[in-house]
Every structure is written in structure tokens, then in C-alpha cells.
Length: 267
Ligand SMILES: [Zn+2]
Image (cartoon, rainbow, N blue to C red; front, side, top):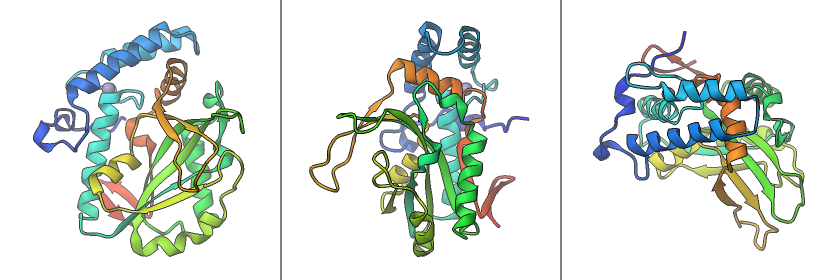
């Protein structure tokens, strides 16, 4: 049975929203845009696209669709999960955020459906186990990006990857995990760690539900970052069909902790 997300997470007054957090109106507009993309697209099976569009269209107060393709349900799940995290690790706790790219999880454009969310999570779990760090508390989220190299150094592809936060004191323990990540042209920097000093921004970034298209250029300086854009319609539809059958909370990846009744509990 789907986990019910309390309705208060769907209507957050401006005074309580994070800077740049989309309003209910903005999320409704995004849902309409995605519904239009689904109906108009040539990507994927027509019946499946219309069924998902119908589901998103029917999402309304107290009758939520609970699809990970729904911006309203995904934003509500994000807010709820962040509130639980803030209860577990209050703002003064020293945290680090880490992004980890696993080359084996990459898929060509058009083939995202060949990797299920559950197998991504199993693969990641095995990586933590192999590095003997599966007992460290990890609060993570499966992010997806569409990676493109402007000069064609690699083929464009989907890169499902893990973004997470953990206690700053655990950072050194993650060295073995970092060392296990494969480096190649499309993942020259397979991990990135940052201290969390802007909690709202960094934690919401860890669990952002909307995928980005990441365009990389030949780097002039080692710290130069790729440019990010929203997905184009065909990739939006491919992503939505991939996410559509899952609950928004399924994208979270927890290790060393679990969701228990009304909060997170360390194991
Ligand atoms: Zn919904």
C-alpha cells in the first residue's frame, strides 16, 4: 500500500518555503507541462503515456497519485523527508554531502527502462558493502541526469547516480568507497564531497526530483563545472515513464537508518 504523504506538505505557505522552493501553483504548472509532453510525445508506448498522463491529471487533495513522475507528490515527499532528516540531525550537526557516479549504472538515451530503480539501489548497496561502510548512516536519493559532452568525447547517456548526506565524522571512512568508483571519460570525477553549510539548499539539492541535462565541455580549469539545463521533451517523457510506477519515497536510499512510524531511526 502506498505511503500516504500528509496533505500539509502539498500546500506550504510562502513564509515556510525554502528560497527558490516552487509554490503549489508552480508545481501545478510543471505537472501540466509534463502531462502535455506525455500526451504529445512519440517516445514510448502510447497507451502507457496516456495512462500516466491520466494519473498525474487526477492528482488532487486527499486523492494523491503518489507517482514519482508527479511534481506535486515528489515535492511533498521531498519536504517531508527533509523534515524527518532535520529531526534526526538538527541544523548544528556537521554534515557532508557526497555525489557518487557509478559508470555501470549508465544507460544509452532511449534505454533508461532497462535499469530499474530497485536494481540501482541494490547495486549501490553492494558497493557500500564491498567497501565495508554499509553501517554508516546514509541519507540518500537516486538522482538522474542526461549527460552530454559538447565535443562528443563520449556518447550522451543517462546517468543514474547517488547523492547523499552523512555525518562529517564519517567522511574519512568513505575513502574505500571513493577508490572503488571507476574513472573514465564520462566520469572523470566520480565523486564529489562538500561540507554542508547551507542546509536547506544543499539537502534539497541532494533530493531534487527534477532531472537535469548536464552538458560538459573540455575543461579549462579542473574546477570548471558543466552547464545544466532542464531535460528536452523526449527525455522528459523517457524519465517520466521510468519513474511513473514508483512512489516518490522509493527514490530515497537509506543505509544505517530506516523510516519508522513518524521519523528516521538509526540502526
Ligand atoms: Zn501526484
